[in-house]
Length: 61
Image (cartoon, rainbow, N blue to C red; front, top):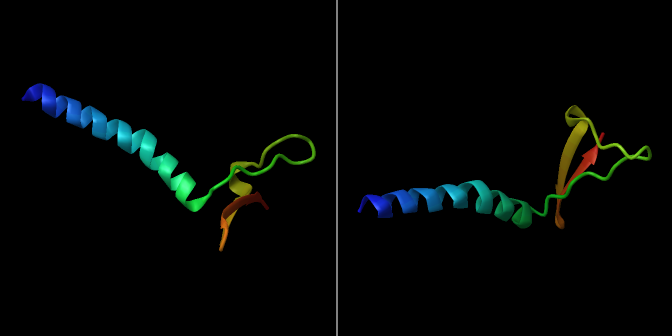
């Protein structure tokens, strides 16, 4: 019985850490911001997200 409990906890942990975030990204259609003209991404404090009928768009401000 201990093996079943340990296996269930391990399976639930993997689902929570891997499957749920991937499902969230797919459901809300969150995309990475495009790099700027110099090929660099946004600093984290300048990232904004806007939601519309087609999903969530993440962009630099």
